[in-house]
Length: 569
Image (cartoon, rainbow, N blue to C red; front, side, top):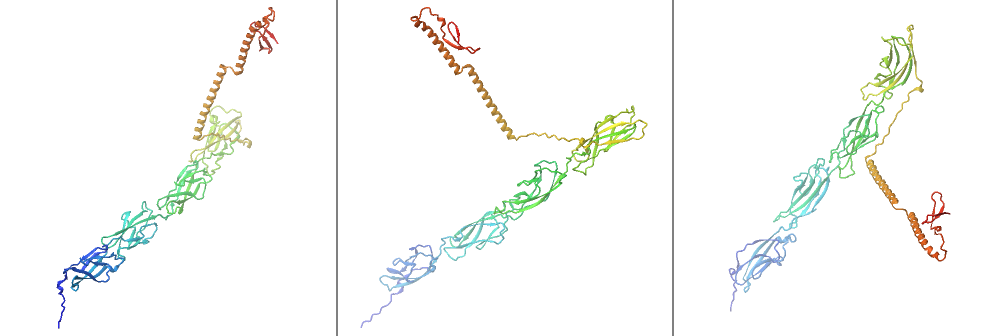
């Protein structure tokens, strides 16, 4: 009986060399990439992966023990690939039962290959300047393709204007952080910024989201102006400048205002852009001394909407200054009186009554005799005309005498200029004898038919525009040139007419010459022809070879060019 006992080969005959049990690789390792190489001590050793079975991500070389990837290691698509535990077996080819096992842990670390992706990728918006603080402009949604769900870092950076605090970023929310004001010069900004989104991978990847926020102006304030008072003389002419209405508007651009007159008189106008107040018509202090104008102010160009306007108004007062423009009038303008006076006595003749009808309150006048007061017999005591007959010279002649006195009446107030009028007083003086005691004055007012007629002579003149003067000058110069050219042509025609005879005259002269030549030729040939036919005693002097008309009597006659003989027809 034979007994066989099989003993195992000692494990010490095949063993793995010292090997790290934890291996870390990057996820961007391509398929076929080397992960690690395991080695075992033995004869003709072979390698295989015992688990997991099947192994979709890794494989091992049977002869060399090199572990390689067999598929992409995309952790975003296959999160289970982050950690893989491999059980590797090493054995001898000729003695497969002689084997040894090794456990390895393969850790796949993610690789930061893609920057974060954000929605929206760019922000362009506009907001009014009245947007309140805390208003949300946008909320950004970003994700990391390499590591979905990872926490991202957001940072706000301003480009223009730098260091602005008008906007802020809270987590992923962009908000208004301060009051936006466009009413200060250059304060209405266009904010250009960027939002940087950073992931936590290696290497660090960032995404920049451009942000452009435009702040639009809003017409917030109504224009206003301060009531003002202007003074103007009543004799001011049209287009006289009274002053300017100054409007104020806090919106930017400041004081961008148009001016209009709302109702009121039409003799004033206001410039639409400058606010200057001008006079258009004529003024009369006696008719109206005070004007009130309601000036309407409308702003423009201060809002994003060009049709949005605000308006305001103020009242300006225009005071008309009185100008002395009416001369006093006397009633009656002409007086005829008869006085009787004794020598050495003074007689009150009359009282001149004058006033200004347009200004009845004006009563201050000055009176003076400007004509007809021979020997200074008359004087004025205010408006009273007095005859003075106190003389130391020869006695007053006892005869009738007439004085034509011109009394000038001028206003004496402070108004300038001083206007005046002239009243005429005709005084018939009848002296009495010394025995007469009483003195009597006879007054007679000239009937209305003798009222002097006031004639106003208005001299009209024409003042053309400058352009008309230029046109008239050029036209006159062209007319003179044309007339000179016409006279020159006429003169040349007359000269040619005197130098060259007309065609009828030339024809008549030519016919006369031809007729004369034919007559002479006929005269020379006629005797030859008649020598054989007529007797030799023919008188050649009776042959007429021409015909003409007498210039004095108008009668026709024949003539002989050789002898000069004539025969009346």
